[in-house]
Image 1 (cartoon, rainbow, N blue to C red):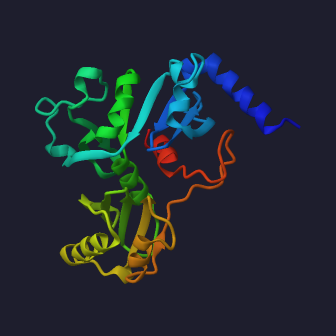
Image 2 (image 1 turned 30 degrees about the vertical axis):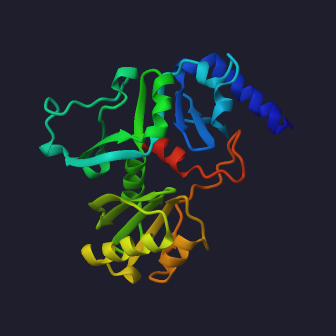
Length: 265
């Protein structure tokens, strides 16, 4: 029986030989970054999670290979959501591919499941990746959240997605499988989060006990933000993928955005 290391080496060899037929997905994070590679049959061949700088060490590293397509999951800023029937491509051209000169420009991506287009700019700390990856296509985290929540089958008609970062959080509201609201709020403390949460309940006319919450990002069961949420509702869930048992997957890895990006494409 082959060991995990032998299987990993076999997959890396396959990718080295067939990268032009494979797609690369990257989820960059502060200290650890994740990559996934799928083959021409859309089978996930490899998952890796390690310190970001380790991906760039050595000339034979995976990021030095050429792939059929490369996708980067980004944290969006300056977000606008536009219904497709109101979008004029000539007036607001979609920029999927970029070089160094385009880093500060807006990008866009179509969210088919809600028949809309999202216009956005990547966060400053992720622009480093844009200078080293050629022909990269950006997938904003908000698109992954919207797609996931649209597909959810829950007993409540109202679903609220919250994605937490160190200094802000994203909010996505779906009602009857229709996108009703998206925004971001700056908050550095649980008290600030609680204030914005109550404001959302009021302005969006939400009844927490009749709302299903899905939580992404820097939040864990029992932490301060989670405790604030649990005061208003018991309907708190974390998006979860089945145990995929992928080559290179670590037991503790949170693959929600990485797998969500693959499902987007």
